[in-house]
Amino acid sequence: MSSDQLIAVATDALRGLIQAVLPAGSAVLVGPPSPEAEEVSGLSVHLYRVGVLPLVRAVPVLGADGRRMRPEIGLQLDYLVSGLGGEALEELGLLGTALHALADSPVRERQSLSALLSEPDRLASVAPGSLSIQWRVLDLPLDQVSGVWLASGMRQRGGVFCRAEAVWQAVQG
Image (cartoon, rainbow, N blue to C red; front, top):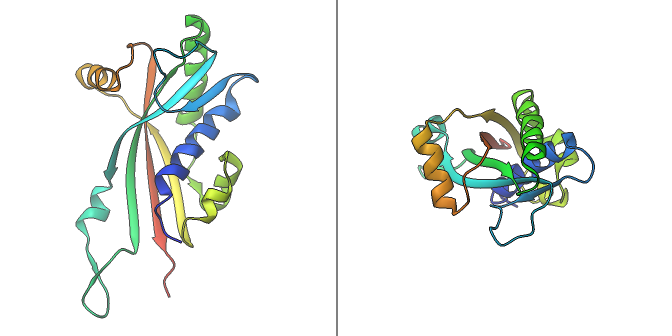
């Protein structure tokens, strides 16, 4: 067991958070929408950047033997939530619903995450310890927004940019 599945758990939880608030029949897919894919009603959740929380990166922890330990992992996961190419006004309505859910989302602790996951067993693969995820809506400058769309190879349209701050801390023992 380790914290290797942290990115997958956070991404699936974001997918589940959005899926829970959308109308029945709306898809929420992980990954960028493909230009060749059939246009459907729904949203995509595309992870485009993985970073380490600055505080976690700046504070080394040494074990009793003098070796560096990894008692905590703090990640910044940046996502683009966008439509799958369905009818434009319907897609914008879905984005508005997703934006509202992200803005109102509390910090989610480990015990409340399984309800959001499409694969709840994945959570069991994360080592025992405290786990929390909080999503924040990002307000990016236009040049960064354009850069993400260009790098993703997607046609630019309405989208919501958000960040998950996922922190896992090992059980002290």
